[in-house]
Image 1: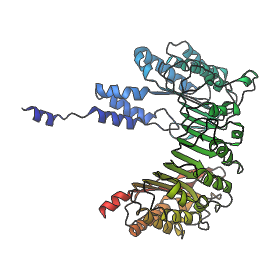
Image 2: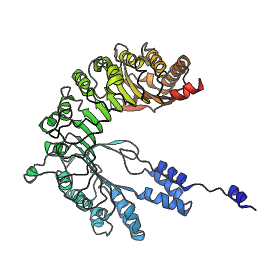
Image 3: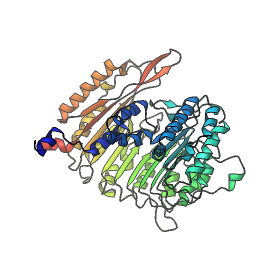
Image 4: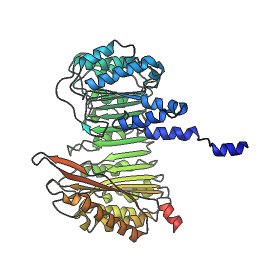
Length: 524
């Protein structure tokens, strides 16, 4: 039999494709880095197929570990030490360590046993990312896990100190994340006081000054390789990282912005910037961030002079005027996101795209813009959707715009039918028809959110047998009007339990629609 026939009967499946399949199976949530039980079962089954798949799957199975301080977590860690005794090389494949203080009840004895092991997590030699979290987080199944009451036991804090002191010496450690330090106040001081740190990413959320007088003179060690900084609701001690580091190119600032007024203008050149002020206080707007990042520093340039990507949350009418000023300096912008959903005021008619002069900026100020993403509220009595439709209808001259994404969120009161809205779907027809004229446009993503109002007792309109047929009919009509084939999907209902009735009420529904204008033009 010829070699060609043999190859045809026994085709060689490229290892690269197997590798891609394994990566897709092992993709983790950004909220919960460890693999879920379903993912682990699939990877384990793949690893038993052949030696090549075994070598591909093993690093994915062991790449991350999650540590709680209850008996379940302690037992898992002790089992892991047994595996490492048999195959020590696995130690080098553990790159993600996620520590949560939220688990309860806590089990000190199991962690005391772990202290005696030669394979204590502090001995892992190749860790790249360390996260220590005491804020709300997500479990494997996607549920929010809230902070448990009471102080943090000393054994748990000691465990974290050992990890930090060990990992800070590793040349592999690139990312450190710490959320909420009131129950373990010295954690960020220990981590960021290490002179050996070579971090490229730092995430600090709700980090406060310690009551201990010793750290009051604390200064963060130089982070000369830091590229990505996320900082939210932190004391000035840690906010100064922004002013000190010259290497930051990706910056996210959230929470209360007032503390930014005390900082000197940074000397870094930003490429990506996200600003999300705390929506609990309407006066906490974008002004402090504008005065910090849009001013010329001592080196003679503005930190935003090289900005390519901007994502910003607006929470008050005053922010719209600041946005207009911000845009004037962003001649190299390629991607723009404006989120007006982060604040839910008493009146929804405060935001208009005409107030930020979107047409002028997209046509002239941003000549290289390739992507826009807008999120905003809509009610039948408001004009925000009209201003958005008007903006889209006038942007046909944006020569490089390839992707448009927008989210429209509408609030339903009592038994109102969202499909009786005389503005929503006619405006969508106008918007889609306008987008078809954009010559460079490759993809359009539309997200519709339907939310219950404050009266949760009225919820039948969002049930599957009422909501889905009505929405499908509207989408079909939209397709007929525009000639576009929309790829539509619907999210599962989001429910809230009413304690007085002990019954769930549907509060949120979403629809996602995608279409590809270039394919439409080719087919027509």
